[in-house]
Image (cartoon, rainbow, N blue to C red; front, side):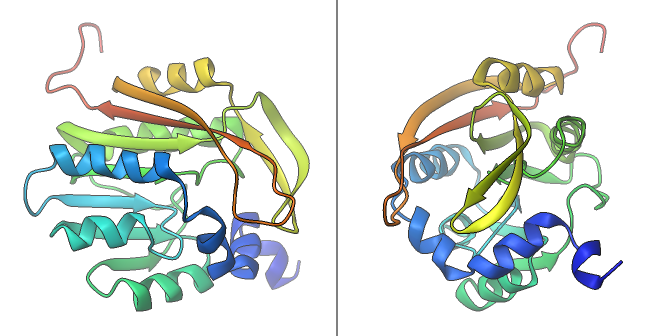
Length: 218
């Protein structure tokens, strides 16, 4: 198998996209509203994990700029390099969240904006459960996905061939609550990327909290 074949598919896609991805999605008001939701609730100097950190903007840039301690993880070497240069106040690591151990309760908040779509449904469920454990009791989780009921569907994203898997909105919310999180707010919107001939995309943002104490029976 070639080196390219051993890499996560998302790494291949996002290495090719680089800053073009940031430019295409920079206008997402729902993403920025989600970050505002976090900023309103985080204590000063909170420890935040940013999964699928991309170019570092807007997520890590916004959170680090507000004085929070941000660790970004991404499978794309190009994205990790861009993020480290664009957001020197945060830490970035080349890592696959599926294979990265996270200590129980080690973060005050976790963000995962659209990193799940090139994982299988079983992998997505396992990652959400991992993130739920990684945030401390009472801590916050912000997740975003494209709420479509598709599994291993062929597609093209910004000129790159991709295979996409996702859940419908209700099923994704059920996955999050099944991981032990309490959903506090959700926002469904349609966003048009800044690309020629781009079509509207459905986006789902969920805001959740890990309960202070486990629910009865857990």
